[in-house]
Image (cartoon, rainbow, N blue to C red):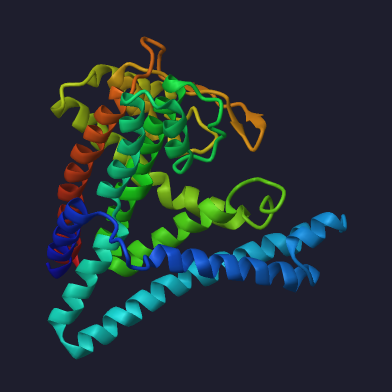
Length: 334
C-alpha cells in the first residue's frame, strides 16, 4: 500500500514541478556511466577509441562487440536496479518514513509527464508566433531526424510523434514497472531506455554494440506500449476526439514502424486527430524510409501539438489508476 501512495504522490509532484532544475537527474548519471563504459569497451576490444578504429580502418570484431553490448547492458541495468534498491534499503534502516519519502522522490524523477508537455509546447509557441527557424531548433532537441529543412507542418508532425511515442516510454511504461517493482524496477527501465537512446542506433559505431540493449528495449516496451495505446484510445473518447478513427488506425497501422512498439501510440494519435504521421525522414543527411501512419485527411497543424498533450495527460491519469490497481492486486495476491 505504501507503493501506491508513493506512486500517486510522485505522479502529482511530476505534474506540479516536472524535472527539477539545478539538480543532477539520475538519468544524467546513468548516461554518464553508459558513455564511460562504452569508451572502456572500445579500448578493451581494440585498444583504442572508436574514432581510431574508424580512421585506421581496422577490421571490426562483430562477436566481441555484440558480447560487449551484452556486458554493457547487464552492468548498467543491473547496477541501476541494485544501487536504487540498496539506497532504499539503507533508508528503511534509518526510518520507514525516510524510505517512503525517498521512493516518492525517485518515482517523481522517473516520470516525465510535465517535462514532455513543457518541452513539446516550446515548439507549439514558436510555430504559433510564426518563428519557423526557432521551432525547428526547439524540435531538434526532441527528435533524431534532421530538422533544418522541415516546413511548419513537418515540424508540428515531428512534435506530435514525439509526444505520442513518449507517452508510452516516458510516462506509462515507467509507471508499469514501478507498479511491478517500485522505484528500483522503474529506474532499471529508465536505464534500458537511456541505453537504447545512446547505443541502440544502427549507425557505424553502435550497429553491433547496441544490439543487446535495443532488443531489451523492444521486450520491455512490448506490453506497456500496447497498454498505452489502449489508454490513449480511452482518452480520445473522454476528450471527444475521433475514437472510431483511433481504433481503426490502431488496428491497421500499429506495426507500421521500424520499431515493433513505437507505432502503437502514434497510430492512436493519428486516428484520433485525423492526421497522417510517419513517412520518410532524413537522419544525419541520409533519408530513412518509414511507412506512413494514419490517413492524410487534413494537414498537421500546430494545434495538434496541444491536442496530443491532452491525450498524454488523460492517458497518464488513466494509467495511474490502472497501475495502482495492479499494485493493489499484487499486494493482495502476494
